[in-house]
Image 1: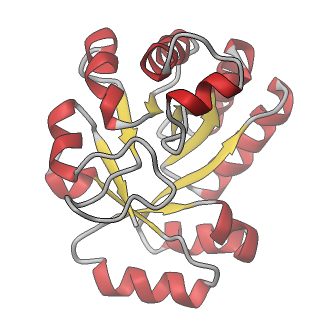
Image 2 (image 1 turned 90 degrees about the horizontal axis):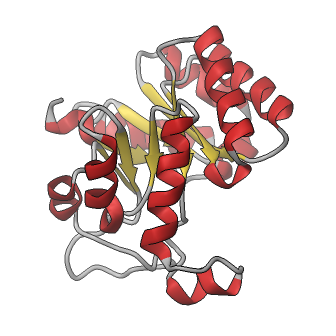
Length: 210
C-alpha cells in the first residue's frame, strides 16, 4: 500500500459545495474521503453517490448500531451507493457484526466492514463511567477479537492500541485510526491522540485526518 493510500481525508463540513471545494483542492494527494454524520445528515446519500461516481473512495462513517436485521439492511443500502468502507459499532455484538459482514459480502464483496471499538474521545475515566472494567486497551483488544470472529475486515481504533491489535490480528486486518494530530497541535475533543508517523509505525493501515 502506498503512503497516499493510507490517508483518509475527513469531509467534516455541512454542505456539498464545501466538500467539493476541499476535494478539488487536495484530490491530487488523496483519493479516499470520509463522509460522516455531519455531511451525511446535511446532504444525504447523493453526496456519497457523487463522490463514488467521480472515482473516489468513500469511507462512510455512520457507525451503525442497531438490531442485526436493521444493520444488515443499512449495509446493503451503503453497498448500493458504491462506498469503499463502512463502520458499525462493535458493541452491537457478534450477531450484529456477522449480519453486517454477510450483507456486505452478498451485496458488494469489495466493500470493507470496520468495527468501531472505543471512541478516541474516551479515556480511562470515561470508559469506567459507562461500566466497562479493565481499561481502554483491554476493551479495544477484546472488541477487535470479537470483530475478527464475526468476519469484519478491520477495526477503527486509536493508534495507541494498534500494536496490540496487530499482534493478535496479523497483517491483513485493517486498522483505521482517527485521533491523529501533528505534534504540538490542539487535541480538540480527542483524548487518545498520536501523530501520523506514530500511527503508521504502530501498525495502522489508514489514518483519518481533517
